[in-house]
Length: 246
Ligand code: C2E
Ligand code: CA
Image 1 (cartoon, rainbow, N blue to C red):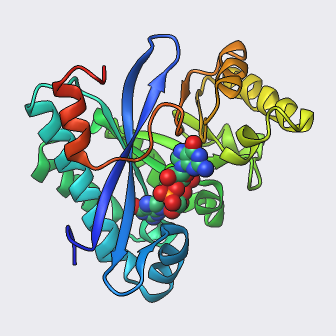
Image 2 (cartoon, rainbow, N blue to C red):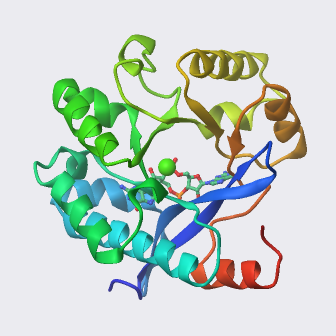
């Protein structure tokens, strides 16, 4: 199953000032032989319910870290590898041990790993979450808050968490040109992140006008179809080798 029906794709994250790729987000794909492709938004919640998320999440982390090391060995610059972690996986008492073991086994520098967590994941058990996040931060692992703006988005809590980066949810980026309210929300998130010394990445950037607006707002990084869809590792290696990606 793993590596065959279940694979990872990688989507570039682009720094707007340096105009270069600084990292990739690993995204899980399930190509079911009988039904075809099934979206992770559909099967991840089921995997969470059934507990399948534990072996699955471990495989994702292992595979993404090993891929990051393979890319570095192939001569690509040391890029960040962002991995989505589900709430149940994060809440496990042995979560840190698993991360540590995988970093050791793959040889990935912890500074090249980024863990993406949604607001609801960290808000569920706040004290435990702060302890786990601090444990990760002490190990120099990067922490990103995913889909920001869709949950509680509490400033008060956010300042207590050791996050490095905020990912602005795609739904705000999507309607930038149609909805002045979404523009205002993005402006507010960026202003707030700056005060808290957080790095900002906007998701779901598909069009030039979205990019232009985000650049004007001094958003640090973007991710989206405009720069690249999630792609198989081999395709990314090839693009780097031929100079198509920098
Ligand atoms: P997410 O973490 O918010 O991931 C971003 C989603 O937006 C991805 O959908 C990505 O393919 C899509 N996307 C990226 N750029 C664009 C764009 O420009 N336009 C549009 N319309 N979409 C864009 P995907 O891959 O279907 O993943 C859906 C969700 O499933 C993810 O949302 C994440 O919550 C979850 N997921 C995916 N892989 C994993 C995984 O390995 N572990 C866990 N726990 N969750 C995962
Ligand atoms: Ca994510």
